[in-house]
Length: 209
Image (cartoon, rainbow, N blue to C red; front, side, top):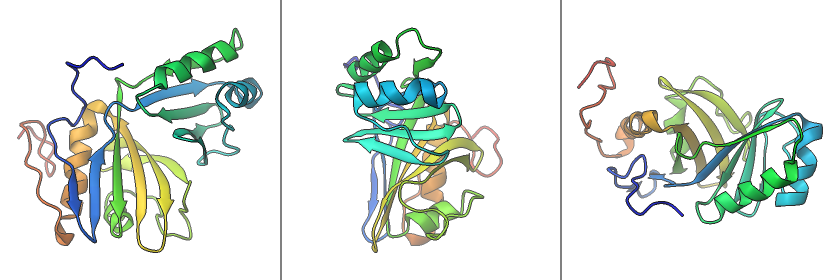
């Protein structure tokens, strides 16, 4: 359970929701862990302990309820889970892995997660990343490590239908506000409101504001 005195990375920002365009919000206190180990080592424990399949290839995702696995390299998997019960899930997985050659680290305090959803979410993100986000190239379930402006992120297309796409963005906590303001700025032409700096970094020059 999170200490009631704790603040999330974007506690100072209110969710943004512009109807028919996009909604931007923080997934506060989400459980985030990094699992390192080869396929032979981690596939069985993931399945037996969490009923979660290891993604078959880099850039793919799997899910078991609200628990999600994102394969970011041949031996690295990011695990995302709700705050409630997240620590217990990791403890169960750690026990299942036993003394096998692996590394499982809870990085919830180091990373933050944002959700960007709506009809313009894909267009908005296309301004900020160099990867091809066309629906033919980046489909629901796909994930990639990339740069959002100057911030390193893991970008996952969680869901999509004919009307809207939902992206989840995992970013270092220290870059969370930068990413938030950058996303809002990219959506200004469609009516997303300006997000004033909080005395940290100017988006245009990188100089102190």
